[in-house]
Length: 467
Image 1 (cartoon, one colour):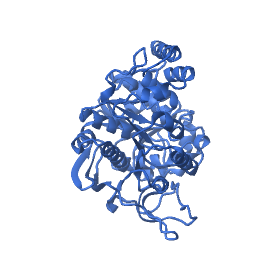
Image 2: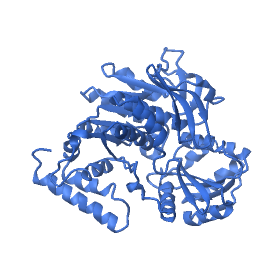
Image 3: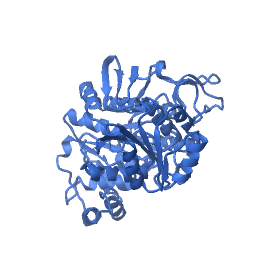
Image 4: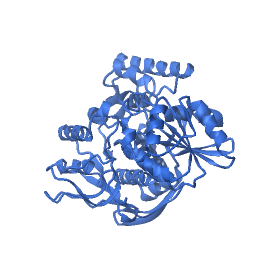
């Protein structure tokens, strides 16, 4: 970072001080405030820091799966002998990304060991276009687009259009890694013929849904006709085509075949080009397969060895709050993040593989990071849980709203309690020793209960969790 002036050095100093103050006051990990302070004082700081990375940078964006996918890519890079710089706390707005760099450079703005560093940066889908020129990624991974926080993002089409405009204005030939099963994401390839495109997707109709879900967010082709599907895997994601204009799902370079979904793990054949290897990941659910494929495709685009990728998939485990497990008072507790209709449907699909003696603790908050309009819970298929006899406890700031939705779905909670700590204790009391508690939570509720579980079990705070 040659030629850094007093302004940038002062910004780094004040940013670090702000982070230290937050941690000393017990107000969190300082994953955002340092970047807010430093970025305001030195607007060019992010670009100056990112340009030092010897192996460049990969971005990961989309509605669901960003933290897990970037977690897996970072692990693959580390196994391959690189030193990843990763915003592993999931702080994915501009302030969070700058905070990550503030913590990695010295007081002069120089990054030690920069030659061996690879940036692995998770980005909020609405922020990605704005940060593209500063970060200049070698590879950009696009996961999916689902309705999420409509009060903040608007419909999925507006986010996709923002991505397209940013790429059209960007002069560098970034490699695009696209989920070809999502027509909104696959469409990015059509305006980027000069760029290398690596597609990923599922090639196993045996795990397809019986039909389209209500939570389908991309029903219409750009020509105006309705998409047709040979297989639907989740929401609007699957093997799609438009009979009117001929657009159709491209064949993926990276894919999963012969998928076997388990209660706590998933096994499948990973196909990367002409290479095929069987992988078991310690994560449940078809959405976890998509995250693994995105990570494998991103690693392939970076030129990482396939062996490093398969080891990372098999050995890395969950990112914080994303199927993270805790042993608490003789019970196994798993935390599942669900923040939009498609995500909640996939969590429900995962829960249906459990025995009936599990306890479900469902948490609904309406903070800024959750989305303040909680009507989305009516687009999720909670009715499917009525087929089972789980012990259900409902909590969070909007516990009453969630309890009403459960009643409409034919579910009868044992308890409706706004206080999350009280509800957690009730879930423990309702679960026999040796049993399991499944916590389904929106983002801020997940952060709250994850903190409680970490305190009670001695686990690291999320901002200190190792990868």
